[in-house]
Amino acid sequence: MKLKCLIVDDEPLAHEVIANFATSLQSIEVIGNCYNAFEAIDFLNETTPDLIFLDINMPKLKGLQFLRTIANPPLIIVTTAYQEYAIESFELEVCDYLLKPYSFERFIKAVNRAVEFKKMKEQPTPSPAATPPVFAQTNTTQESIFLKSDKKVYQVYYQDILYLESLGSYVKFHLADQVIITLERLSSYEKSLPQSLFVRVHKSYIVNIKKVQVIEGNMVKINQLELPIGSVYKSNLKKIIGG
Image (cartoon, rainbow, N blue to C red; front, side, top):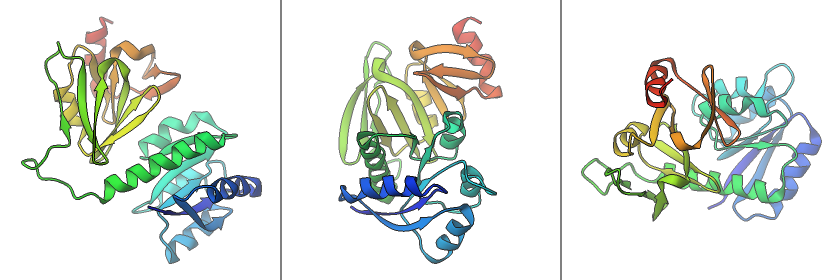
């Protein structure tokens, strides 16, 4: 599978970096270069890429503002020098968030995630009675869960899960060194995962209590990433942690 990608960034050097990296990969092809959001809007009116490498800090119309204007956005990989927009970006269901300057290895990882997510989106949605995408061990004495992703079944140990992130009809399992995308809704995992270990803190996030580093205000920090706490979930979180 080869993804046709568009680069949207006001810095020419950023275009060069992505283009140079892309030439070494068989999975992506650069089909367009836009230097502001308005050029990108015109481009999208004529062509539909599979993937956009999107900068955030651009003149007049910021990257995330531009993303909100797209009715059916393609896959998005954010490329930025600003870490503080990560949560907002993932709430807009981006594939990955690359902090400049990023390595070729990190670039490959982001592209591989995009390819995997593209494959998942193209798979037909199974009926509830069909082959389920997840085989969950609901007994809290068990230590793992089996996840179906990209025609493979992964055994994932609870202790390795940092948090779960909702992507509409998909869920991203964030592990310390891997992300697994499954065709399922977050509410299903909320019921199947042991409640003694996992708690929903937001409409888009379930966290592993043992991985929480800090809870401050309406944010919970896991692995140096701050996730929002939704108002409707805050009381339950306080009850679980005894706050």
